[in-house]
Length: 514
Image (cartoon, rainbow, N blue to C red; front, side):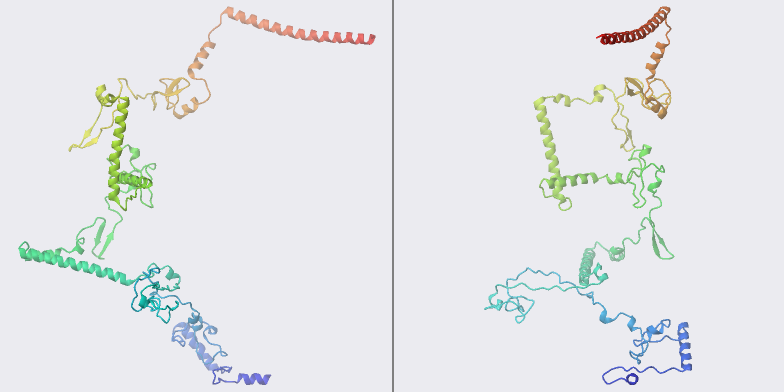
């Protein structure tokens, strides 16, 4: 067995490509030292890195057992890292960027005439007569022109990787964009030719001079009309030749700085929205302030009309009318106007019918209350242009007596509170007129289960009235009579008990005698 092993070890490379198992020659001490020095120099970067069979550098810090090929596999191979890289035969093949499904294919469309180059048997364009799988006809579709089979379109099966499945431009045809560019170029060329013809006509008629024409051609450039305008919120940095865009104009006051009260309108920092009016707690009119909240701007102008039209469109669609605000706005507007007219006519007819049946039209034609009562307190302020600034609110009819007069620190008037048949102040629930306001403390005390002040006052007065001598004597006699009655009742109880015991003894004696 030892001999066979030695003979096997000494076998070389045969003509059939079988690699022998010759061990590598043993290195001398000098060669080993030179090899170690070269590795150290490569690690320090002083010597060029070792190159594999593909011409790629090998990292000198990679261990030898990874980079070098074992001697029993192939001793002639140089160190390599090919086995560490993805192998081409084990890699999954994905579809290329140019592959995509066939577009515009109508699978169910059947032609009525025979087309040149189609199958002579069935008439389909996707194969020839020798590849046709349909039963051979006695007279083919080429000669009859009837019974033409639909084209067979087999869509390719795409195998996309992770990025290919999520590519938003996947399947995009660049020729589509080129077609759009050419279309815009044609439009631009047509505009330029039209403008040139117009200038030629004006120049020929004498309306335009040659100098004006040159001036117009230099200045009137549609693509550069906004270059000379200073846009608000922008400033140009001449040193770095860039345009700096500010977040907002400096003159604008931030929404959260308009009212510093923490209980005012809520400001959302994420959306930079303040829906409510920040001046609502100050008592200022929304028309007078510069900013009255996002809802004020949202519900102004034609927004309310738009919302009413949308609501009418929904109601009309539910009742069977095919109308839509975005699809057919003109039809919806006309339908809404006719509906308003019909609704007003119906209301007038209904009103006239009620008046004709029950009467009372003279009460509807009566003059306003201000003219009947001959008093008005309308206060109106006008601007210097005649526009109404303040006023025209409905006036409150006032009496000849003083109203809303608050005294003794009260915030409500006398008579604003009613409880158990007594009037009082609502701010402190006090039932005593001309009293001083005690606020929340008074409300807590007055809501307890106690007798009102006036009732308690009457009871204490009745108790404090002095009694006469006759009344005192009668009370004394009544007390004595009550005492006597109690004593008599006690004596009767004792007497009855003793009599009962005597009767029982007599009965026992009679029974003994018998």
